[in-house]
Structures are given as C-alpha cells and as structure tokens.
Amino acid sequence: MAHGTDSERIDRERTGREARARADRRDAAVRAVVGQGLLHPDAPVVGLLDVTGIRESAAALRAAFDAVTAPGTPVLHAFAVKACPLVPVLRLLREAGIGAEVASPGELALARAAGLAPEHTVLDSPAKTPAELREALASGIAVNADNPQELDRLDALVRSGPPRSPLGLRVNPQIGGGSIGATSTATPTSKFGVALRDPGAREWVVRAYAERPWLTRLHTHTGSQGVPLELMARGVAEAYALAEEINAAAGRRQIDTLDIGGGLPVDFGAEADSPTYAEYARLLAGRVPGLFDGRYGLVTEFGRSLLARHGTVVARVEYAKRSGGRRIAVTHAGVQVATRTVYAPGAWPLRIAAYDAEGRPKSGPAEVQDVAGPACFSGDLLAEGRSLPPLEQGDHAAALDTGAYYFAHHYAYNSLARPGVYGFGPDGTGGVAFAAVREPQTVAEIVAESGGAHAEALTTLNAPARP
Image 1 (spheres, rainbow, N blue to C red):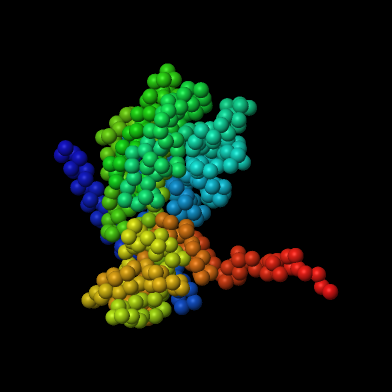
Image 2 (tube, rainbow, N blue to C red):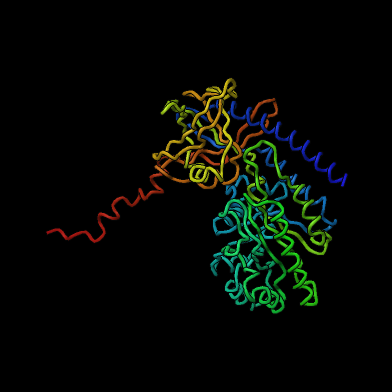
C-alpha cells in the first residue's frame, strides 16, 4: 500500500512540475506569436501546439505501460487521428513511437502522408466499405470488425488466402456510460461493436472465433471524456475475460492481442493532468493482471489525452462592450473552432486566459465577463460569466487545452475561415520558434469550397428555351 501511495505522490509532484512548465511555455508562445506578427488585426485568431508538451505526453504514455507490462510484450500505442488530423502532428507522434488509429479513408491518407507504416496503423469504424476493407487487407493494416455483417465481408476477402492484416472483432460489454452520453460507447444501445449482453451474442462471438482461426484480436473501447477510470477498467476486464473464454474454447491461444481502446479523460478545469497514464496503467494492472503477463500483445488508442493540454487558441479582442451590466469581450474565436464548447458548454467547458495587446498575461482584479465569438447567434460564447482580468479592445483571449478536437472540427458557420495552426518550441537562444502546421484558410479557398467554380450551375440547369 505504501508503494502505491509513494507512486501517487511522485505522480502528483511530476504532473505539478510539468503543468507549471507547460503554462510558462504557453505564456512565452503567446507573447512571441504576437511579437513575431503571426497574430495581428488581419489574422486575429491562431492555433498553437506545444511540441515539447506533445513529446512529453507520448513519452509518459509509453513509460506508464512499460512499467506494468512484461518485458518483450508487443505494445502499439496508436493515436486516434480524429483528435487532431494534422499530418505534421502525426509525423511528430510517429517519431515519438506512436502509431495511428484511423476511422475513414481520409484519416488513413493522413497517416500515410505522415509516414505511418501499415504495421503501426489500426482501422476502426462502424461503417467500413468493401473497398476500405480490401485496401486495408492488401496493405497489412490491422482491422477491427464492428459487427457480424462486416465479419461476413472479411470472410469473403480472406478466402483467397491467409490475410496479411491482423484481424479482430470489436465488442461492447454494455456496462454503462459516463457523464457525457455522446462519448460513452459501452451503453446498452451503443452503435459500436457486438453487444455482448444481448441474447445469444456472447455465444455467437465465441463460435465466430472458433470458426475463423485468422481472427486473432479482440477490441473494446468503453468511452472517453466523462467516463470514470473504474468503468474503463471494468470494460477492459470484460474483454480480457472474453479472450480467455475464447482461447479456452478453441483449445489454443487464438487471440494473441487485446486492443483496449483509449479514452483517458482530461480535467478541463485544472492545469495539471488528472488522471495520468501511470494512474490508469496501475489501475489496469491491479484489476486485470493477466493483461500484462506477456501472453497478450497490447494496443491502445488514446487521442484527447495526448494532445488536449498542448493546444491553445489565441484570439484578438476586437471590441469590449457592456450589455445589461455584463462586460463582453468580442473575439474572433467562437463556434467555428470550439463547436462542442459553444453548443454544450456544460459538458465541454474551456479555461480562458487573458493576455494584453503585447501578449503578456494580464493581472489585476477579476471581473465577471463573457468571452464571445464572431458568429451571428447569441449563444456563440467561449465562456459565459467568467471571472477574468478585464479584457479590453486589442487584448487577447486564449482558450486553453484545445489541442485535441478543436483543430479537427472546424465549423464553417458564417463562412468563417479555418485559422492557421503553428507548432512552437525553443529557438535555441532563449526565445520561441514557430513552424506552420496548417496555413490559414483564405477567402479564395472558402469561395472554391463553396462551389465558386460552378456559379452558373443552377441557373443553366433545365433553363427555359429562348423564344
């Protein structure tokens, strides 16, 4: 017990140091992005990615599972590309020893563009087409089938010979959800996987493996944000017990790899990481010790927890006004970059940091205020009723912990442009260097994506004949 307590104390001290260092790097980056002219009146919103922090998260993930896994066990940590589908980010993670979990042809193309090898790529999706499956099997990419009909498609594809790809089946242990229904994937009616507690389902799964010696993996994913660690661990334990049952029924070690998904939640209300990868890995080792004894390879699919802390959206305050006695800072960051936060602020709150016109942290007495976005509806708010140092015209508001999903889900409301995204790191002389990850979207690109080349398409369709 003392050892566990010591480990937890060491974790807290380390995460506290990392949080302080991360905040210092962020403050320096905000000042530098203003000082170097990447954020200015004509480019009033940018996304920033902390390269040092991303590398540290990848190292922490690998170290956490290495600490509880038998030496020599094959482990693949595959980043959920949906969380940050930017090629330079995937390349950075690849260099840090992280693979890719993809769920569409587009995400697979991004992983390939980043140089991810097939053996470091996993294809998951509840709606894979025959073409997607053929391509994955031809390339040697691991596939987790979602349902019996998809397994039928794999049957047809492997008849010509043993597959190059590791193939598995996703199951839903139906153990319940967390506080956010949309991110809970182990509910009784979840759309993902084979529902294990439905009548006859478990028996069908065991039989499906017995009939298919090439089916060697088992996959589950209990959820992500809003799902407590104990529930996540219970989902993994259910999958492990099923793998043991399948192998016993087959009389051989048919399932050789367990894909336990990802989903470590992020505390968006604090700077320090909680829970940590080390905490989760220790919990799993205590609840499911057989998972780590070397008999099973392991795949994880973390996304948000790897990137969230290391992203910041910085927006210029265009106007500061009052309405009904409430101070309102009108910025250029709103629903187009923070869609979930704007539409569901209770589930997806963001911390906001205040910076002055030069990008320096603001201090002084706080005042309750709203931080609003540029879109034409009243609910376009990054934060409502938040106590902050007063934001004035020309200041900057920064939405913290936005490295995951906030650069992925651009919402083109009012045809607002996608902001530029820049990675930052030390320049070697005590300053901050930036690298473009994604260029800002231009107005010309907005027009092109909106059918600009087809302006006459509808006016000439079935046009009445001229007399």
